[in-house]
Image (cartoon, rainbow, N blue to C red; front, side, top):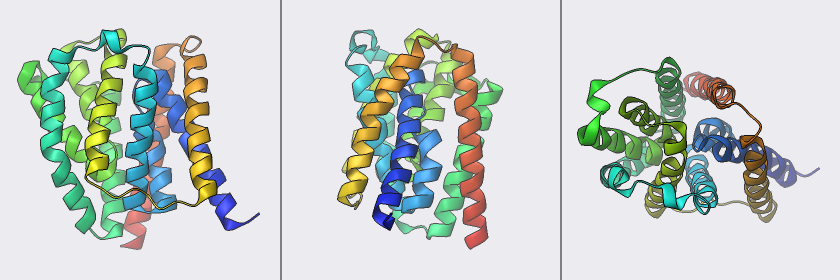
Length: 243
């Protein structure tokens, strides 16, 4: 099997897992897929592909749940993120690859750790909290592809239920990833790789939809968190090793 097809199969597997997770829980494509994509494609192209995949899966989920989006609550998050996305793209373009790998891995580990512990932060409440969370999320999404945990922490501190979180997280993923993609160049992939990515996104959306009605929410989230933590630690160690 050629290297191009081997890479395509690896990319497809990672994207399938990330897409299934995000369709299942409303967020998590980047947390699960970013470490693997970054290791395969490098920080720049891996993060861009994360932004695109997360946005596409968010759009697929949003098609059936857009009526439950709370635009008033989401506006401060989205506007704050729009302000910090360019800064994140600027930082990512200028950091050496080992430092960027280490930074992405550390960001994933810290973010997942905060979510797993259910940290309560008074600053992440009301409109002020939305602005803080949106700004942090926009920067992390553009620089490392992992903007979801900041929004998850905001939702936790704002007392959102799972039913409220999922459609709003999907809306946020579509808008903020569109901002992030606009600030970068598209990834340079071979035709087999693009075919594998597109197929995996569609298959992952179907798998996640199927599992959503059959998987207890707490079990799904815990599995996602451990997958993300493992991937983040691997990426961190790779960055430190290559410094």
